[in-house]
Length: 199
Image 1: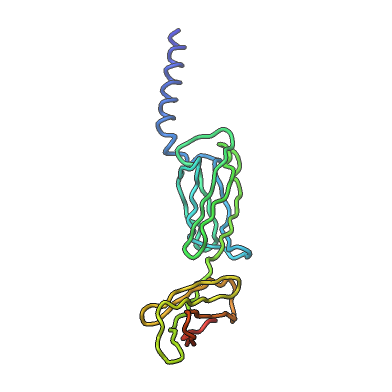
Image 2: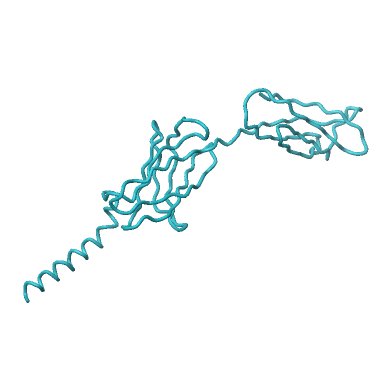
């Protein structure tokens, strides 16, 4: 009877110790890991120093950064032990790229890592066109509507009290672009002078 009591006490003590330290050693445990490379969308160019956050049921569960040289990341579930795979999400962000969230499977304790490559899309640069609007008499016109359009996008501005305007477009391809710039204000006919270059 005494031997059985010792076994029960030993089991309880070990259970308490494991419950206490498990949250602090999860990184050393096998499994529960998602890993892969971060790429530029549509290319094989890897992205370093991208922040990868593991999200479970809408709650962040730690983050890592992709390797600066290789774009490789590896992130493990924190503060928990799971014995069945669970659904989660990876949120990946990097300056100059759109933030993306992808669904993933977090493997159970002891299972091989889930391989999850992620592709980030570059945020197109903004091209700015600025200038002023004046009528045929050379007088600068306020409250004129200036529209810049091209490549399926458009932007408008209303001239200030000095006739100045500034409009912007996102262009997702490089090279020279043909854009249309118009100014309207009724009833006065106008001409406009643009001061810009786009490439």
